[in-house]
Image (cartoon, rainbow, N blue to C red; front, side, top):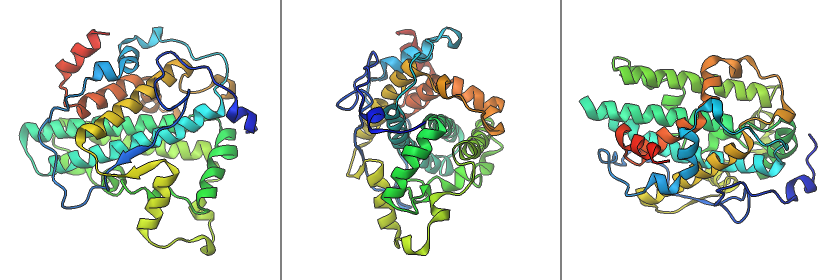
Length: 325
């Protein structure tokens, strides 16, 4: 797929329910506090957010309440490059928010026992599954869009641009790299967390195989003359690319930004589906595994569950909101 100015600037139809950015598939900056530090406190137990998920996320609730077999079919027209650019930037912003929430719950699980630990592990599982969905969402573009638009844009930000620079990833790296979940293996919810982490590994490998068949990242291809020293500078470059600004934010403000983005994702998926049939490609084996396929089919419910955990809603309260759709 050739990427031209016309394919980026052509006016897109606004999908029903769209209320994000200044136009259809527009972007918004993400405001985040500084990354979690070792001395930061764990959040209080099930702190109520005061935010109404049903009001803020009507399309997300409607999509999750719809039987998947009867879900709206993807739009017939191929999604434009602007849609995939929206997915790339906004999906990463959602991931940053999930990493922060996941890191907080890791501290709760590590410093508690009994019901509180079980609740924290359930939230962690929801956030990991949500991150799995975001990996599929951000990487849903045709390979031509990745090669012609996304990868060059990262190169222009820095020739060695790398996901390892993400400031918020450090707090969750041990868990997502498979070194942190074993300590909770004796808990049934902990076992589900380990399974979610395993699915994450499979998806991460599958995305790399689909979009970068040669297997070499920009960082691996960069020369020494392209190096930038200092993690703070690298983190700033990474934040700048993904429209992320570091400012103090309260927990409700952070949650509102998450719910706003989840609603926009839900509206996009209802209009366009996850993958564009016009650019159907042979998926690598990792992305054809049952758990991965199920995650892709179940994105609205995955995102709704994580929204419920983030908002402090238990299963019964979330079910009531679903029934109200």
